[in-house]
Length: 324
Image (tube, rainbow, N blue to C red; front, side):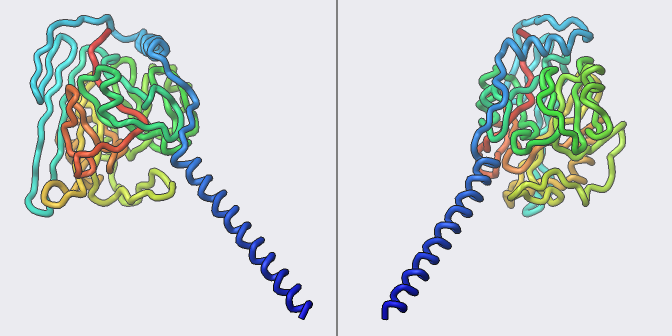
């Protein structure tokens, strides 16, 4: 009798020990996932003075970048001043379940420093997010799109406003230079020091490259951007954000809505590349898409994020603002 009782107690303790160990393991896993994907990790707080100083250094070789603020003329789809011209068009193609709705912004700038980048909460790190419209509002942006969501990953080469924040080359990327030009490149083949020496002001790390040296880059069937938990395939029709250069200081930005039958199914990468080619882009690059895809103009969200008119927080934006 006593032996049976003692054996029962041992089994009970063993069961409790196993349960505790399982809870500890699950807790460690959950914390690891939260630490990787949810908990903010601020590495650098960026002040306006720092950004302006770095921007000025990055554009030292460009033409006169002093502010020439004049009265601007604008409406819901256009903006014109001495330094900036923006025209936005809404385009719909196809019908029914095959309908696609997208927005094209043709942007001509007097100087390269009118096209800028900004971090969510003015901080560089991982899992730091704000809505595109909120970041844009804080920078008095005339026009803005979501960037590369660098904060979702820990690799890539990230240069913003002439400052190198991350140097872990892994994928095809895009750089904006002080002379107003844009270049697509492979991070493993061009060093950050080369980019900075050549006048790179901003780099974005997502991809793929859509057009390089005037040619569509080809087969997108095996493109891989990330291997992170929960990623969707990017080959199928999806909401998209892309930037293209027609010539220095003349850009075209495209935001495609998607995942909303009867309104917009989204675009494949092949369709997006062909569109950028049709628009006259000599260089074009795919940025973060899906629920992130957002275009903001004069404080208004132009497109329909997530098919629900609900923005998703992002880590960074590209934006246009008048000189200060």
